[in-house]
Length: 206
Image (cartoon, rainbow, N blue to C red; front, side):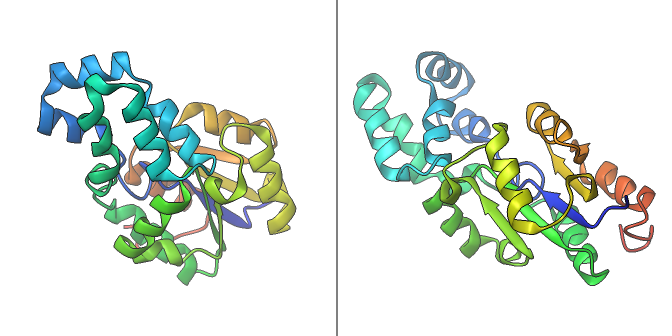
């Protein structure tokens, strides 16, 4: 079966997501390493991705870790710096697929409030044919249910989906369901995959 739709992750596929880089710049590498060793910030963010209110999750974590209070609150105050910049070549691929009449879906671990900010900053996030955002769904990758929910809603057979994500565990979960997958490391590699699959011409994939 040929590919009938392309599914994009967002973080580190369409938008760079690197909180560590912001902390390194603001508080320094050593202090950032100490904070991440002491506080499960990515675990905190996982709760946001599951639908918990973003400010509540960050402020609760800050209150529980008073030695790092101000630094933890940066996750709220400086979030947009952490989720930037857009990966322009990937955005061009998204738009090229749409121009070629290939349906494009988003499947992303993303909070409700943070996604609203993302939409304002990055208008291309509104250009998908369908969007599956974990905060609204109450399920996250790589747990099987979020993939099943996408399949049930979109009406495309799993073997006709091509999914690009930067995390190997998310890719493995999709592949286990029969999806075609691409472990995203850079947009050039993904462009080559789209050309190889016959979805875009080399010119359109630039």
